[in-house]
Length: 218
Ligand SMILES: [Zn+2]
Ligand SMILES: [Zn+2]
Image (tube, rainbow, N blue to C red; front, side, top):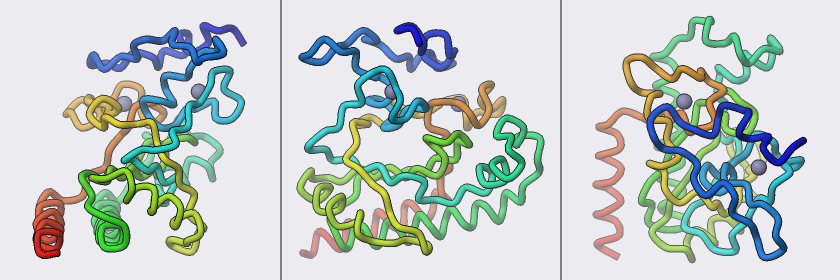
């Protein structure tokens, strides 16, 4: 693999100006830092990436790996073809209900157990490294750390949880802005930027309101 590998992947530039910049950043040993991992909190090359995946010791953001069982990804895996799943038809109302449920369950549990949540997002990309990832931004690093320590010993939906402190600090920057546009994302589900599946707006409002009341009265 050459050091320009990422540039040939057509995934370094988002359609809408949230490019990866500073692609030549290096660590103290002169090794190139993987900007995808830093920006998105995940990289499609995984552990065999030729660049360094910086793991922060402290962060307000936790990445929960594949916490959401994304039906589009699961179907793609079964058919051994993640590329073609966009041709499939899905019950989007059912998916939206599931997203509402998982968002609410996670938000309430994590906020009550660990601390004030500023933002929670669920990715429905269909690639291995982003599908079903849930990113949670806490208000305080200490709360995120508690969550990270504790959740790796917990289960969710009959699966063990894998989570890590994440370098991804700016959800807007990692977000694929064309995904929720009428045209959709030209890269499909394999896009390397976050394809965020949001719960109903009203639910987010209600949860934020309840959380504010709870923490205001503590
Ligand atoms: Zn990487
Ligand atoms: Zn995209």
